Image 1 (tube, rainbow, N blue to C red):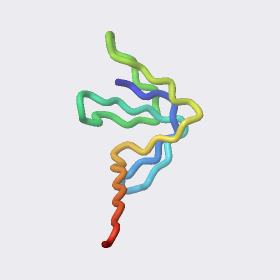
Image 2 (spheres, rainbow, N blue to C red):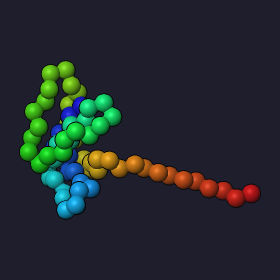
Image 3 (cartoon, one colour):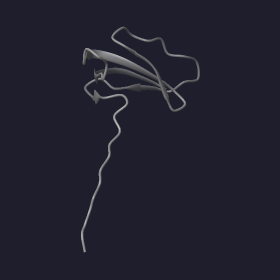
Length: 68
């Protein structure tokens, strides 16, 4: 999958913000994050993410706790 044109909030050492940015995902792995357009590959879905915010690698952990 290629996510194209998003505003990408990186979690690298520089905390870069790529506007626009591209993210390539293969299986369950993020294999590329770039400020330069990544070419689409034959047979791979391309998501137009212009106007969207993307934070690759973010794991949304929501813990709801109730005491009894």
